[in-house]
Amino acid sequence: MIKYYAIILFATCYLTSFSQEQFNLEQAINYAYDNSNSIKLNHLNVQSAESEIQEFKSIGKPKVSAQLGYQYYFLRPQTVLQDFISPTVYGILDGLEQLPAGFQQPPVTSQEVAFVTKNNLNLGVEASMLIFDGSYLTGLKAQKLYRDLVAKEDDVTKQEIRANITKAYLGILIAQKNIEILKKNLATAEKNYSEVNAFYKTGFVEQLDVDRIELSVENLKTQITSLAFSIKTAYDLLKFQMNYPFQKEVILTEELESLVDKISVANLDMDASIDYEKRAEYTNITLGQKLNELNLERTEKQKLPTVRAFASVSETLQRNNLFDSNEAGFLPAALAGFSVNYNIYDGGNRSATEQKLTLEIEKTEIQKKEFERGVSLQVRRAKTQLLNAKSTLDNAKNTLSITEKIYDKTLIKYKEGVGSSLEITQAETVLYNAQASYINAIYDLVIAKTELDIATGEL
Image 1: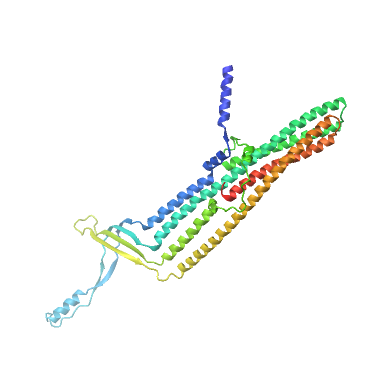
Image 2: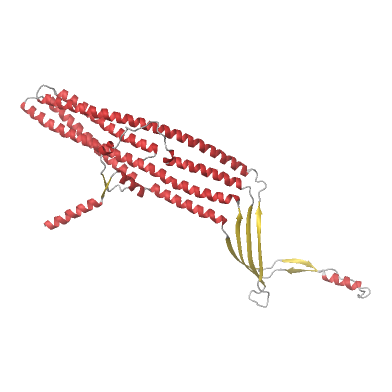
């Protein structure tokens, strides 16, 4: 029987460990990178862009095609052919005075003649190649740059994922810290309720004192229950951001205090230079600008002539009876040449395209400068919020320490009979408000640091 229970216990522990995973913040982010559907879509887009490059390259590569054609005429096309031989012969004989006297030349006749055979078999091979196209090489550069632009979308997606995971992860840690404080308050309130209820039974306090503390206990229980549901929702949000199975448990190993201790504002410089290149969006804008410039260059080179070379070899079999070897055999033909195409006037299409691309370049340059201004404002605001959050947390921490002392002294006074239950309720309310302010200050600090890292591209 003991062996049986041991097997069950081992299986339970194994299945529990298998159905849950532990993550610190960086591990959670890396898990999201590996499993994000957005990143998978980005990778497919990169592969698609690579295929487009190969497709564009094929324009400049030699092309060879083969043709096989067969025609059988049930009714051969015919034409009417006048007899031009007889009049010519009669004219010659008349000139030589070889015609009998009084000879009358017969009228010209005509007959239906077919110039095609019933069976026609054609075999041919044709090759062609682009020799020169001014816009081709520039277009190829643009295709490769577009692939790089698509690949850079990965960086934008990763920054968004990192930001979302960080906020969701920190939200859970804050909520867990909050519920930890609430449980501690509940334990203290239940202890006080037990003591005051004992005093009531001995006649030292009134029923009102017991009811007030009991109300505090019930309020704490309600808050803990509500917060527990909120934490469950927060975990679901984190799993969603990570693309982690909802039915599996996830354990967070990061300590909130260690994250807070890492945040320092001692060397925070409001006017420090900003490296815009760290922002993935900025890199995309830069690549987009280069792509517009290449498209403009490619359009300008379309005014140059296009040169192509071609060659073909073919054989034709024409017979009334396809399998009659006494008739003519295959008739070969071969040719080679080149063609030059030059657009003299395209209705102003190229000029309009060049103007549109020039405007796009100017617009992108303005967007780039506007993005720099926006990032500068975002960084300054984030730094200000971080300084304010750090100052608020320091004040909240001091306030909490003071209110804890006041609450402890008020409780001692009440137990010694020199204080009222109303004073305890008031001190308790102030303490709970201070605790809530402290938790909010911690949250504001870690979020402010996260927002600063997002603004500077460090996250």
